[in-house]
Length: 311
Image (cartoon, rainbow, N blue to C red; front, side):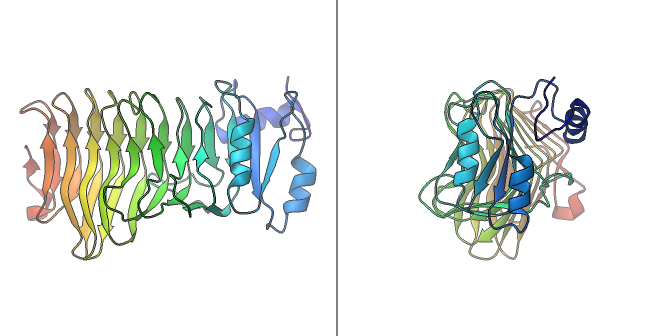
């Protein structure tokens, strides 16, 4: 069985799997740590070792995200590798791209614990003209705070990238015309999950949507909370779930302090939306779908939310 300087005994390795929820067939586990941490030297000395494929277990990061990308580059597509990113602020100078690295799990180590969003202290802030995280098939990103740059999405999914999992992140939304905070082209989000994320306006402006699925089939968008705040903030569509057989369930969409959501949720004719809650004053909560088939138990704040929205 696997042992190393990271896990001195097999029992330590098995205990780590039990504690973190990693599957028993997990590939390599990489760790990223900021070099500015007071405990960096001890951490590096105690945790660093080399895998048989030549990759290293620990990737130092000066705060620009290059250590995170180096860990991603060390992963092998399909091996089910895990990257555990330590706490701190990462002001990115490059996009973090998982392209060509299927089944890679990018995890902020203290990001879990909430039903929706994260209390984690690993923050990814975009500084250049690029997206924040670019997904790959079967990949996962979870536990991060993300601040996009005006005019650029926080997470992107290219056409044909199926089955990514984007969950338990906190998106501080920065406005920019025609910008989707999570943006998926073509069939990119087919058979995927975008769940339990928190979205909140960070800087005013116009946003196309918080979550945009152009046409990926069987995509589940659920248990997300989206809040737009401030008189200068306009969001055209809260959630656009454009694929067939998609589900858009149990999301909360809220306007605050004169902000506007023009359309709350838009779905395809063969899709469904159930259990969603809206606090939308003048805009329309639901659009698309099919009469008597698509909607169940969706409510707006009008009249105390007592009346279901049926169209």
